[in-house]
Amino acid sequence: MNRRPQSGFTLTELMVSMGVFTALILLLFSVVDGATRVWNRSEQRVDAFREARAALSLIARDLQSIVPAPDTAPVDGVADFKCIFINPDPAGTVDVTFAGVASDTFGDRLFFMTAQPAGSQPPGARSDVCLAGYYLDYTAAPSNAMAGSPRTFKLYRHFRDSDAAFQNIKNYSASPQVTASLMQAASSSDEVLARNVVDFRVRAYDAALTPIVPWDARTTPAVLDISITAYNYSAASRFKDAADWMNFTSAKNAPSRQVFSTRVFLPRR
Image 1 (cartoon, helix red, strand yellow):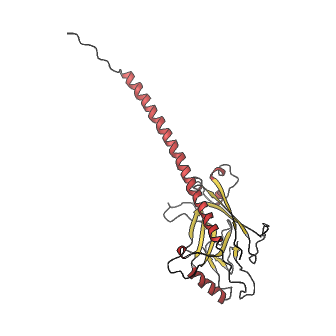
Image 2 (cartoon, one colour; image 1 turned 120 degrees about the vertical axis):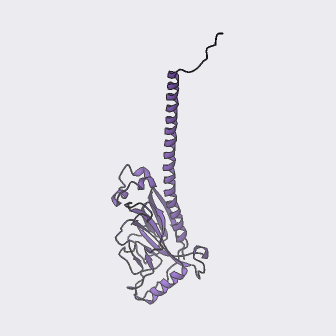
Image 3 (cartoon, helix red, strand yellow; image 1 turned 180 degrees about the vertical axis):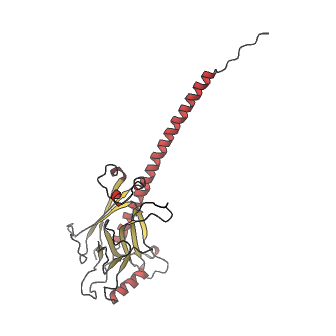
């Protein structure tokens, strides 16, 4: 009885098929890996820049509720605080003092009084007049980061609810101004508003949109231009020191950096 020959694959055919299959798998893996990297970079960029946009929105909201300060006749006879502080002396002034950031000279500083509803304050707030401030600091990495992690730039929000603001104003008005201040920046309760912010700029203008330079604390501006320059997380992770952060001329850094700005017309009272 004759058997019919059975069809099959030779060893060579199997090896060629496995080689082609392996190549396809590697190609697919490469495509997926590349797409994942692009997606991660995009997410990092979006996350970092989302914080910067949110920071601008919050600053604008606070400024639109700005409150003139009651210090029109201070005890020292000098009208040094009328409505708003822009770039007070980083070593500490009578009205705004700093703790822990005195040696930092990066970016501008902005402090003012603002009216905030009860929902924006702790329960039991008895007024709406609060103190707000924004400043940039070059600080250590979070405590849960790996040892030796580089320092990073952060934009902070200084905020005191109405009860604390009332006490500060009361102490300031009743004490010699060499011992009292309206605001104390860089306290433990200051909030990190945005990370990887390498530049924070505030420009003041009068009603005719003429720049107020140099800034005069006795002048109430009509308009403020505020800009925030931020890096995405991927770029920030490469920086080793402040010089890396501040290297704006680097072609490598430029694609990872973006500037956000807004113009705020202050309410006239």
